[in-house]
Every structure is written in C-alpha cells, then in structure tokens.
Image (cartoon, rainbow, N blue to C red; front, side, top):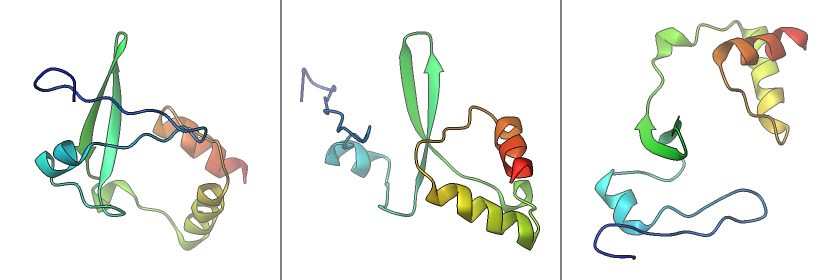
Length: 91
C-alpha cells in the first residue's frame, strides 16, 4: 500500500494485474463471477464493477456459437458493441 488509500500491482506479460484483497473486499468481488468495466478518463482509468442485463443480450443459438468461438480466441478487444457486432457478423 502507498499512503493511506493507494495500492500498486504489476502487470504480467499477459496483461493481467492483481486487484488487491482490500479492494476486492470493499467491492465484494467474487472470482469468476463478477465483471469489471474499464473507463478511460483522460490519462486515468476508472475500474468499476459492472453487470450486463439479460435483455441487452438477445442472441440466437447460432450467434451464441460464434460468441463462444470469439471468446476462445486471444487478443481481441472490442471498443464498442458495434465493433463486436461487426466481428460477430463476419464469422
């Protein structure tokens, strides 16, 4: 811990960083269950717990199959739902 309320974490070669225990506890984060959103604010990044409403994800069985394929691939980051949707339609 740095100061009274700041923590640091190194980034692995896979781009992963550990969220300190105190922060996970404060936000009630559960491994493998909770999602985090990354919001860029100038030169800062705000990390917040997020949830996805089921109504926002109305995909057909065929589309879910494509989504599972994308999720198995490495290194793809979508900046918007539109960019994700275009990638999904390209499969």
